[in-house]
Image 1 (spheres, rainbow, N blue to C red):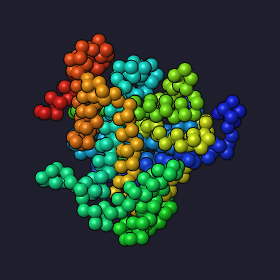
Image 2: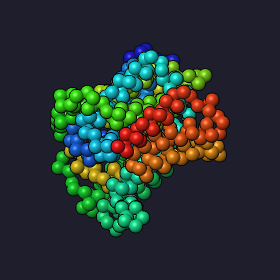
Image 3: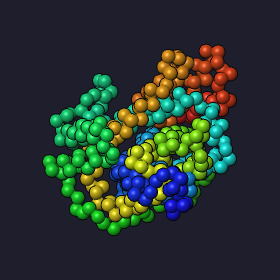
Image 4: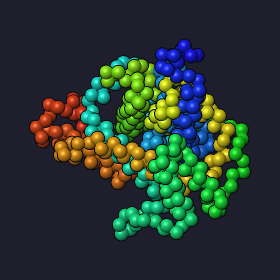
Length: 437
């Protein structure tokens, strides 16, 4: 084991790797409860989604550890689960089973891109500013969902939105959750989001806002309500009815967000661990293969896109340097299968702070955009602002991809626009025409 993971070459040992794997798990364990909560409005069974989340995380992280040998954990991604629920299922009216099929196909496409080397071409085709804008926009979108779920922000006939009733017990609990999580994150506590959820839930139980769970540990719930549901549309509809232009745009969005989210996370975490040499990441192809495989496997199990987690950096900070740490994290996600009774205490008030804080962290990508260049600022701004205001990640990406060639051509920099971006311009124009019919 030590030889396979090159402990001696990387200057590590079992203790450091185990501590690193545990730290990573605690930093991202919140997804076990947040993901079922986010996907619940689609009509999916929350207990089955909990199991699918834990298994997808365990399997994806295990593949990452054994194949790519990186201390990087995977789980259903924040932002992508919100896109799945609010943009695809609720927004476009696509059944959740068909949406899972879209996730499965996006995973297969990402797998093909990874093994053929096309990924470099795609990375170079899309300007960095649009990638940063997409990440920041998703952050605002997630934060807005958290504020809405906690009723900190509510509807208004006069102004569209307004501040909610902060004397409402549930809303007050969510505000407390945000405050305590901010404090934990500010002092640098590893797993601050997870611990913030625990403290918020306990306080909610004490004051009667949240019901007390009947148990803490139980047998693993059935996966039957979601397992294999991604393939159920094939028995009910013709291929032309399944793979509509609408669904193809959804698949493209799943692919786009997962691809760049994973690439960015891999580079950032690997650079922290000292793996990046001469701006190159060893075994990058294997890492992307692990991510794409996990996405398709997760879709079969019954959850939205699985992707690499930036929280893995906390494990690296604790000493993790090899894939053995990922094996530890995967084992802990497997153990988590027996804690599903705690779902009853993880209400909107408990998960809202996590959504808001994750949104804040993702919004940090705004700092990487050159706002002084107007031809860049316009498409970037539209990408960012459209996601929360239209309640659609796909719409934000589409507007950015349409406006970017326009501003660059107007600036006389049309030669700097990759041909793929011109193709995407027309694809998203067709998308909006299709939506208007």
